[in-house]
Image 1 (tube, rainbow, N blue to C red):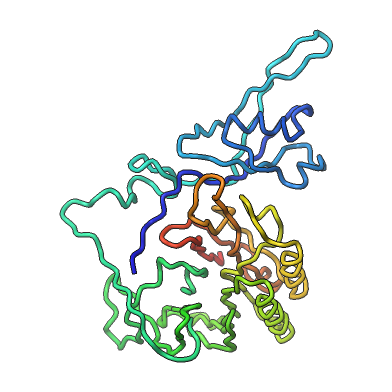
Image 2 (tube, one colour; image 1 turned 90 degrees about the horizontal axis):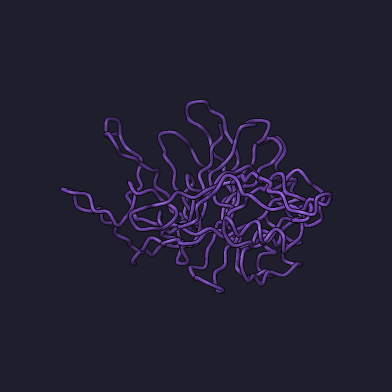
Length: 350
């Protein structure tokens, strides 16, 4: 297996335009203003309906050479004098990708550029081994999403006393695996205990206990089917889990292979409204909410350019009310896709 880091030349980003004159609150007007930053993709629903006038929120396609201005100057008509006056529009970026001057791409800094060779050191080599076992399998709990960058075969074992060395990470051995390689779950056995509660084709539900504090929570790792009909088994399974969960903190995360709203896709998407409605209904039925996040608003890219380019938010983190009460500052970071076509997500409880 060969993994190559994706080179992102263009990335969709949400921006806010403050102090925008009313004559620019149209699709053509927003396109003119956004052209000073990138290419306008679309505005959010509230902006389109003019229900929030303190700023316009639009999604634009940025490329490496974007100047990323903090202010824009537009001309607004002065009806009294029959002339035009310049007005300043403030630009706020909800998130900006890192830019590399070495390879002229987005997503990493020059210090971490894979094209820069480190003198005196050879590049690390990852060896991938497909092991044949039985039943199910299990993505990395730390990364929470299906990121192929982390599918490296390692020695998973529980260390004996005195074996822990500097820079080492040890894992508890498990027998959960399968020929499909759908979901992999790994954890640091020195810090947490993981009890597998339920295993289905599209999710693994487990109880995670902190060995130091003895606090526990429930985690469901998701890998939804691409077919919307088969995903109904996932929605049904999550609803049945919710019925058995009362006061425990519960976190559901991973690749749902579905979007909730058309704004979660950038490009020519074929998601049906019925499919999005079913996902939304599942979230409501399970009383889950989206955990706040920072980073890339889209978590999957089809690795195409031009008119064929498609970005979607297929990966996400959902939590119940008890989780929010227990860890009110919890959030996660959505990084750019790298060697996988999906974004890695890093969950932070505090």
